[in-house]
Amino acid sequence: MKFFKKYIFPALYGLIVYFTIRLLHDTDVNEHFWERDLYVNIVEMSCSVLVGYAGIYLFEWLFRFYDRRWPVQLCYQGVVRELVILVGANLVLVNVVFVPMDAALKQSWIPWADVADINIIPTLYAIVYYGIARSSSWLRAYVDNKVQLEKVTNEHLETELKFLKAQYHPHFLFNALNTIYFQMDEDKDGAKKSIEKFSELLRYQLYDQQQQVPVMQEIEYLQSFIELQKIRSTDKLKLKIDFDKQLNGQLVYPLLFLPLVENAFKFIGGDYQMLVEAKVVNEHIEFRVENSVPLVKSIEPKAGGIGLENLKRRLDLLYPSRYTLKLEKGDNNFKAELNLEYER
Image (cartoon, rainbow, N blue to C red; front, top):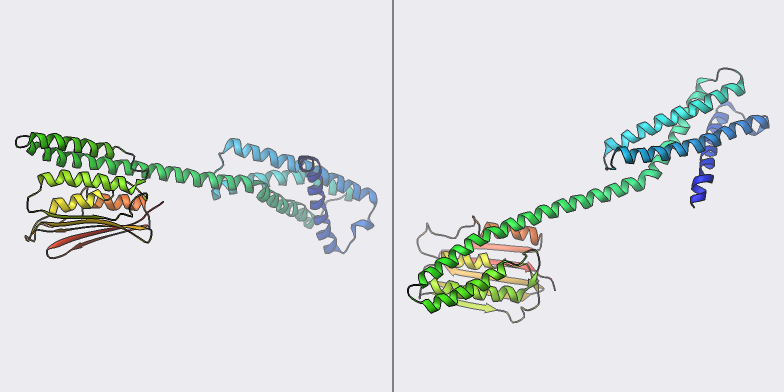
């Protein structure tokens, strides 16, 4: 294949250009080139083969020049720039060889129609050759651009996810340490147990949030968090927890359920009822938190700050088009339902 491309194809390319020019010319003037002197045809075909070898060599040299001079990037400006240079070089070549050859054979000035054929036909073939020869380079450039774009996008998303994760830590630390602080004077043993719970929770939060974990790890984390929150909660708290036994090896991203539970503890009031449940439904995990709210109208769960807004953004990044989050404020309660499409 390399032998054909290097030694045979250039000659065929030159002959194709020649016979195309001859076909158009002979059709126009009603002549037959095979009826001419053999000497004339041999000279013309020899010059066409010469142009073929010189043209292909010139094109390949230009392609290497393009790659050295300009990194291959898929853009219209780059294609136009390369084509202008290639067409210009090809016109110089064919005019240096074909025009003097035709004038010498006719021993007179050649008609403008012949000059037009000599310039237009090789130019069209040069453009076709450029499109075929450079298509692989442009395809590779397109793929590289897509890969680079994906890389930049992923790096941006990773940075944003890390930022969102970092926002949780100060908020979580403040609440947990505040709970332990109030235990220190009244229940030192309880404070020690709370510190143990706190260390377990903190250790879990150090996981890479872009790596999925079995949902049971998330459930165990929530149970520890709830136990820690119950310490600082009022005795009026009526808490119901219901986790489906089918929740086991399903994979989810960590700390997505936490903001809903945290929000419930933050704004609970009224008769202090809270429900936390999770179940498997048709390859989806449905997580629901419901809590009663104070009767004071000015106090209601907020969807901003580092809580629910943070959660929504993380869900957009981690589960695009694969989740639903419903927040519903009633007269005396607040409901939050998160539906995730899990992976096995």
